Image 1: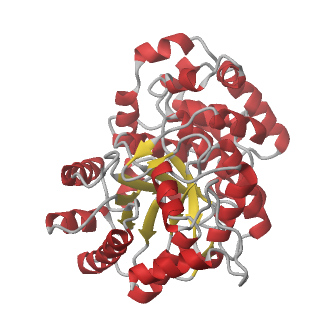
Image 2 (image 1 turned 180 degrees about the horizontal axis):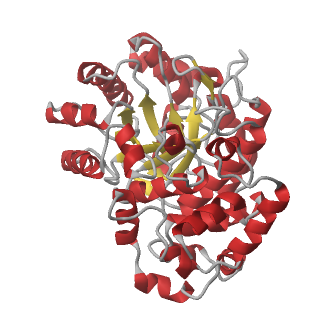
Length: 455
């Protein structure tokens, strides 16, 4: 199979989304899409393995994918077609251990291919069977648990505003994934101020959380060299060398940051020190997709992520806008695909269940996707005050949403954080938020304790 034939087949087999139409690679109608899906189902995994979509000699992500592949682990499925792989993953033989054993046998293109012939139900059922567990100060990703990133962004990085959002999140049992701030200004001094703020709160409250200021990786390297309290290093990544260059990064830069963060040894239960964000459409928006559909390009970003053993990987699924994912249906499908592909590749996947204000989506769509992902075993979601990020100007999930889905599905936070939250009175002995007090305020006593400790 030629490179161009495989690109076209993967693109035309993708469920419809605006970004692929924008790129001119989508199937022209549903009949053509189903035809492509049938052909893709009969395509061998070996053909996909032997047909790199971008020449590895010209693209370091392709070279990385090639280097990661384990021929011995691939041997048991070497005779599979894409359809055979789907059937196996849905079978009782595909236990958590059996799927985990395929981590380095599967390439991003293989998992993207199988996702294209899966129903949403299939994506949920298979991903649920593949937990990916990572550790720093908390253990994230264990079955039966759902972690939350507190996202206390402020348009001017005001310390009081950021601290208030953090304390509010902690009082709702959020923050066990990370307290992660998108800084209004990307500079070492701004990053240091925010890191020091979180560090002071963490130590005063004796709270097992990790912090991250989502500045550029070079800013984090600078801060670490100056002795700043850097827990996790953040970077946006994508599925081609050219797309990563548009973020101002390369693989050697990520390795430098990873090694520097590991050398600091700030974790207590583990040393997974990286936090990556991705999103369908990133490569297309940088004109760095090489004629490949946006979902396959997204899966290729997970090859970059898993090379650095991150604590967290987050697909910001609806953030780029309706040019790439037009409405709630497309955003829902993309979120389930990304989570599925990441988990099969052994990546600790979270999802920012979100949309921009000019997309054809609303909070009901996000409620649906949040619930589906929680059933599918997503590692973490966002906790944004009131669901509305006042700095980035988009809609996500709130602390209240996290409380809803944990209660509805019986999910707990990370075990270290759960123990702390019970101790300070945020959670009851069952591991859920305290019931409303006589005054009508949920967790009033716990909030008062947190505020008193933080003063």
